[in-house]
Length: 326
Image (cartoon, rainbow, N blue to C red; front, side, top):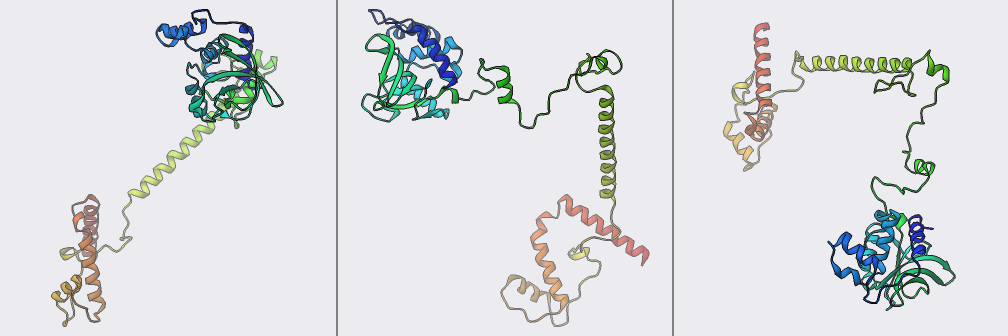
C-alpha cells in the first residue's frame, strides 16, 4: 500500500457519510477558499472531490506528498511532473477518472482514493460522488485515466514523519557513512581517559589520545606539503644556464646574422614567402631564414606581450654571458 495514501485513507474513513448542504456548501470548500484563495466564497459551493483530498492531506500532514488542489487535471499533471504517475492500481493511490473513457489527463473529471483492488474492480472512497456524498464506490477500470502515487513524490529535505526511527535511519544513512561511535565503558567515562568534543564538553567521540595522534598526523601532512611547495617554487624560480628551447629572433636579436648564399637575394625570399614563385632547391641557411620569417609573421602581434618580453630579456642575458666568456 502507498504509505502516504494509507494516511489519507485513515482520514477519509473518518469522514464517510459527509454530504454537502442544500446550497452546495461543504466544509472542505470553505477551508480551501480561506486557506488558498483569500476567502473566496466561490470555493464554498464548488465541486469538492479534490478539495476534500487537499483537506485530508492537510489533516494527515502529508500535503507535500499528496498535493493540495481544487482542479483534478492540475493535480494529475503535478503527479506526472514528480515522476509519481502510472497505470497500475494499488491501495492508497489517488485515482483519476474520465467518464468518456479517454486516457488523456486533459479529459479528467473526477478523483478519489483507491481503498482496495479486487479482481477487475476498484473499491474507492470518493467525495462529491452521486451528487452530494462522500462515500465508498465500486468502479471498473474503463473510466480510469491513471493513478497518482503520493509515496513516490520526493520532497527535498523531508521524510515521512510517521516512519519509525530505524526505518528513517536506514533510508537516509549515506552509503559510505562511518559507523556510529561506540559507547565507552564506565571506567573510561569516569576517570582514566577523558574525551573532549569540539564544544569543550565531555563527549562519547574519539579519545583524547586518538585525537592527539590524528592532530599530529595532520600537522605532518601540512608540514610536508609546505616543504614540497617551497622546493617546487625554488625550482621554478631558477633560470636555466642554457635555453631549454631554441629561441629564434629576427633582425638585431640574432646572435649570428644569417648570410644568404651568393645566388639568393632577399627578394627571392619575399617571393617564396608570398607563394608567387616556386623556389629552387636552397641551402640549409636559406631554409632556416624562410622558417624564421614564417614564424615571426605569425607571432609579430605578440611582440609587446609580457611572455615575449621575458624571452627577449633572457636571450639578452645569455648573449652577454657568451660575450663575457668568449
